Image (cartoon, rainbow, N blue to C red):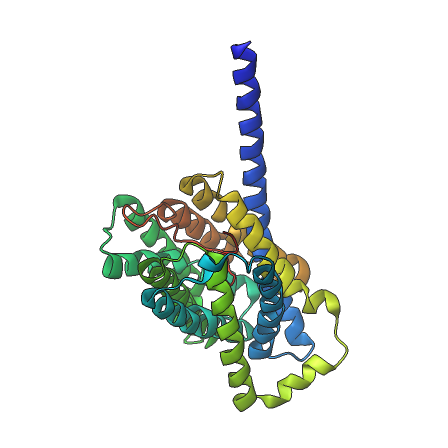
Length: 324
């Protein structure tokens, strides 16, 4: 009897584990639709800042409904001074600067190149963890860093030789740096365990700041919100590209080890390049394939939890965690 019971529990556990892996893979795939949706919105006259503001508006409404349903849990809002400082700082870094740099850079280069360059985030995450959190490099992170830099070098070498490097490249790299720094700041300062509430505050502040940015730099962009739009694009970016991946990603984390998350997250660049080819008609070049292989190998080496703070360097392209 005990033998059958153990077999049933093991089978049930295995089934849930596979489901979690499937959820994670789906989340990674969906998160890579952001560049595709953004590029398609650009074709309809949207600007980088207005595209991001649009995504923020939809996400903040969704999060607001979620927080309203959970409002009775008053401890969710018990934020210390460190929590407040960390939330404000991550808002500026990861809620305003990083995404605006990314969407602006995406306007200037192909979506597939943007995906590959964004894959450098683990390099900067590890570096900042060493500098600010007292972590140490290990053999895996060194090997991963070498392969990631090699992949980026191969991708950009021809343009560097011909002195034709697009302005979009440093913008995307800057976005990666800010994204990595956001992860480290969050780990260092934010202790509130109700991460979805912290993210709601961060997104709300981001809406106000990005809205003010638009008001002073491109007020005409607000007219886009009054014109008829392709709803599949307008809601596709925030819902399919941000909200759904966040739910599936952090839901899957409850049943998966950090190493498994790192491995599955490593397929993100593959999904991004394939989606760009399928929906934007971008040609996959030989240098991109070679760069992609090097980047994936680098990610698989570097995407391990660091010793003290247990950071998975690769994160989904999104606003942040959405869970209790």
